[in-house]
Image (cartoon, rainbow, N blue to C red; front, side, top):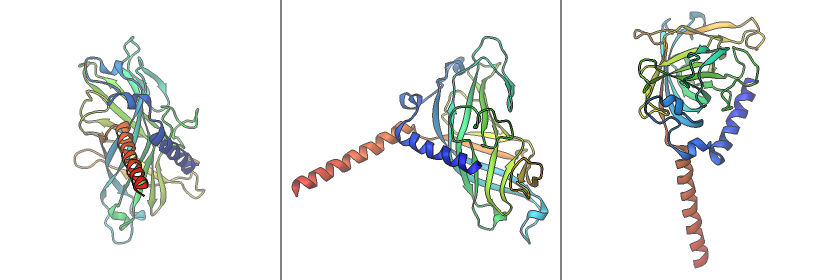
Length: 288
């Protein structure tokens, strides 16, 4: 079911990316321009990022290949990430993952975001040259879990995220990711987390998408499980295989995000290239 949901999402994203970008992404480079109370001025849209991820994996000894020491393995993976942003609200209340965010005070100072597709790859030392793929997102940029009404831990790898204006400075905001991830290609098969991986922006945001790259850091211990004998997650027989464990700097995971050029610009370049090719072909046919 997981692969089906992710596959459907990626296929839908491909169509969306080539033919039908969200209006906000076409019309302007920013969903949230900088300024005082900028979170309250956000407009919905979808944006593309490049992600570089560090995972500090503490694998249980019984799952390590023979000859490898029991240690924490810093694992680097990278890949594209698509994030949707909604419109500002007064507060988020009673969310099954986020809980309550913000205060009901009449100020539109919170806005939801959602990583709806992220595929990052790398070659951890403990896999002896094999590639691991870490997937996040349910493939649908609707800011809600898929299928609707589901409860955590989400089968569809739904991401719960938000941007919240700072109370001490209305020109700044913080962004938080709470992610369910799936690691594919490990020696123990597919691994997933039962509690969300929580990452917080290390520096304040002044707009969205941000100009420079930003690190999002987790300081928590997050356990990764295999599905267990029945091959199904969250039926009670899962096996704890590894933990994301804080390093000497206190980070168990670091997500570095950098915004890539606006999708509409990419389409314009492709269209321009196709137009040049068509003109060149027409000229050749005339000469013939």
